[in-house]
Amino acid sequence: MSRIGRAFESDIPALVALNNAFAPAGLTLPRSEDFAYAHLADYRVIRDADGGVIACVALDEYSPTVVEIISLAVRRDEQGLGLGKKLIAAAEALARRRSYAHIFAVSFSDELFLACDFSRAPLSAYPEKISRYEKIDRSELQVGEKHCFTKALTPAR
Ligand SMILES: CC(C)(COP(=O)(O)OP(=O)(O)OC[C@H]1O[C@@H](n2cnc3c(N)ncnc32)[C@H](O)[C@@H]1OP(=O)(O)O)[C@@H](O)C(=O)NCCC(=O)NCCS
Image (cartoon, rainbow, N blue to C red; front, side, top):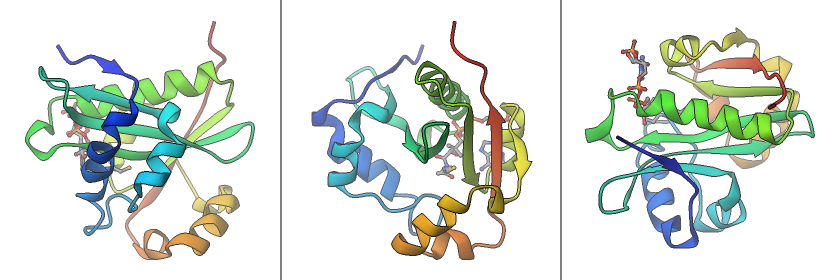
């Protein structure tokens, strides 16, 4: 059984390596250790029996009501086992607990997000995303096939 938990400072190199393994293909945006350190409380990870990180996800706040799912990555040999779905559910639960009203993601994985009850939305619904990534890296916006997925969140009880 894979358990989802928090990330610790000692996980930072693994978080960055896992995320950045998929950056050359444009599936994730490259992230630095400084970024992971600053967002450590926003990560959720799945570990192997030895405690090593095999999958991760993070939240990135856009406004007090809107948050993005970022750095969703499952080690290649662990893909297709349901870990991606679990991480999305964990990210959602964290976002609810923090009282965000909307969560969104920009991804190639249409089936995955639709299976998690997200809906397709135009990227223009999130102008902050466009302006933020114009400053960092336009590659994500230039990939024609990436789609935006969104979900309204009901508050945690
Ligand atoms: C995308 C990713 C996170 C999915 O994780 P995973 O653990 O392999 O996904 P799951 O096993 O939870 O799959 C859930 C469902 O989504 C589908 N799915 C998963 N990845 C998919 C993909 N890339 N394209 C289409 N469907 C996909 C699966 O068929 C599965 O459906 P099922 O439950 O009906 O069989 C993982 O493949 C990954 O790390 N990819 C590289 C990085 C990446 O693309 N990150 C996404 C950035 S938003």
